[in-house]
Length: 506
Image 1 (cartoon, rainbow, N blue to C red):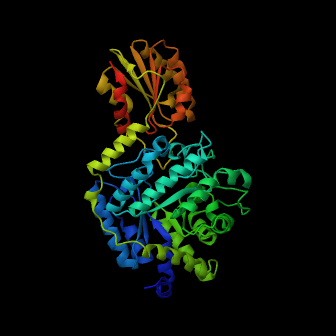
Image 2 (image 1 turned 90 degrees about the horizontal axis):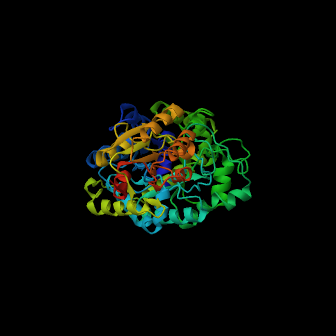
Image 3 (image 1 turned 30 degrees about the vertical axis):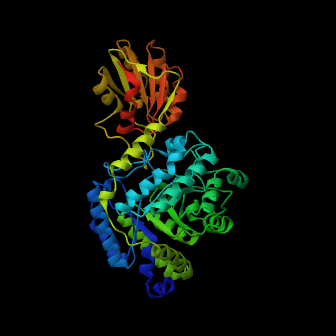
């Protein structure tokens, strides 16, 4: 059946349901989520780590979601996930996972194949839409939300890496989305928590932030995610780009000639929820030209937004042609998809995991001429408590940390540094260093944390051999120039810590 015929047979509620992508808080769909599908015809899903168990469990979940949504809406769902790699990964533990984007840029020749593998894993698990790659240029090193999620500070490198990633996903037969238009890399505010402002002229934006998006549009990127950022030069409406007709339709659609799918960042992020309200934000986003709305966590807010859009269509605040244009585009894309077949055993194969392990090992950044660091008989390992992580990132569990892991392998002493304890904790650690043969300090986003910077400075005066491990941001290494040995991991995880043990000896 053609799209025009389908549109003619759909109710307003069925059309609106296609605009929404909804999440739920558990390993199995909640009653509230199922009600949204059955009663409000919600057509798409977003998955997070709290939804993901083993490969088999995830495959079973997605097979159920596909059946439920097709049965209730007559259309296959977009099943979406943020699988950027590194600190933003939702895949089961027994699968292959990409390094963080900034690490990937160190081995650019592996990106296309790595992205193809991820795409094939997602498809095998029943996921047809990856919310990646990040197209932001990380020009602000104090950026609290992008950082290593970006391919880097150079627009040309970001563009080339993103092109390779998109080619890989397209080869695997899944959708992907470049984010966060028009560019979140030079902000100092996390839009999960507040409303960022990007004060640049259009000339500056077009020479910087917008270049990767323009280049990826030429590459045929299937979707673009709009961010909740105020950009006065692009929009005079004094609302975030997600809610701005000038930004979405006037600039992205008409000036940049983008023909693909336009989707929102999560409308529950505080930049929208606290400043405008989720329902009001969703109505404005539809009128701006956004086609897929993400309400990722709260069923009650999703229901409120759907009802508000129904009212807006009924009273003419949203024109029927606006709704039909968006829904028609969604249906066209869904028609192009093959029938979704879930095959969890095709994800996390030994070959896939071996490729990612080699990729990860090649991304480690070791500075200086020394090939190894001598620990001596009684090393002191200090792990900084993770700080500066955005809500989108996966933070390490409390029952495992760098210092414990290293102590179990090499002996010595293991300590945690909590920057909230400040100078008193630093003095205690310096005292313990007096009894150590060497000190290994693992920082975690020290570029955003003055106390970690002080810890490095104080340890440098302890007259012991000092090694620094940057567990997440490589920018941490700038604050440990007085150390004898440095390695940047680009993510804080068991797998990266396991990879660096070969550089240490007793």
